[in-house]
Structures are given as structure tokens and as C-alpha cells.
Image (cartoon, rainbow, N blue to C red):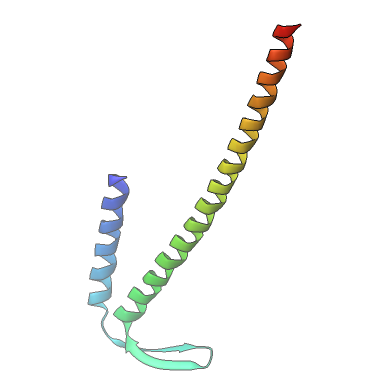
Length: 93
């Protein structure tokens, strides 16, 4: 986990350095919007949106995995109950 944190900080530092060195104004057009801003703001905005998208996708996958685990635990409990009842029948016979 520490490795990923260090890697993320290094990547963020490189992005910050790159964006600060590219501060020239650029014109941005998206659909019907049009505005002028610095290239650094465009770069940092794109990275920020990428991070947000990645976090949302990760959370969705975590929730799905959690639901599967909960379902499987329920199935395991049911099967263990069936097994113990069958074991009791075998020992009674």
C-alpha cells in the first residue's frame, strides 16, 4: 500500500511540474461551451476528472464484490446447516 502511495505522489508531482511549466493560455471548446484558460488548468482538470472517474468505478466494483461475498456467506451457512442436519441423521441411524 505504501508503494502505491509513493507512486501516486510521484505521479502527482510530475503532473504538477508539467502543468506549471505549460501555463500559456489556450482556448477550450466543448460542445457549445468555449472559454480561454491556462494549459495548466486544463491538464489538472483532466487529471482530476480521471481520478474521480477511477474512484467511482472502483467503488462500484467494491460494492458488487461486497454483495457477492454477502450472498456467498449466506449460501455457505445454508449448506453448513444442511450438512450438519444430514450428519445428525447419519449418526442417529
